Amino acid sequence: MENTDREPAAVPGTARRERLRRRLGLGAVMYVGELFGRRPESALDATGVEPARLGRIAWEETAAVRVRLLGSGQGMPELVLHDPAAYLARAPRTVRITAPLNRRMGFSPTNIAATALPVDLGQLVRAMVAHHSQLQHWP
Image (cartoon, rainbow, N blue to C red; front, side, top):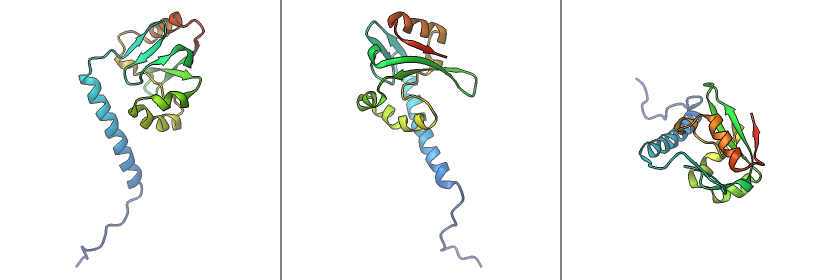
């Protein structure tokens, strides 16, 4: 007869899977918010850029725009900042939460979801450079 009062043995990788589930849960909440949001994904003007989830970023804070290729082959625009810590100090809470994970994966905290953009990446980069002529474009 088995002893059912014992605690189950730890399964290798369980803690890691649980952390991943929590992170994916946060992503799902953010995605649902995007589905029902009424804001454009990104707005540009002479003073800066305002991606929907990232908050306002002045051109003076931005060193470059880089298009990163994801595993799926899709490009993702990323703003390279002069001082990421200064931006993160005022960034929305969701950005501050996800920034360490982005950094571990080699990304900036300022990534723009390309799937939600009404224009292609080339048009977006050209518009950014048109608004801020000193902005570098890193492929």
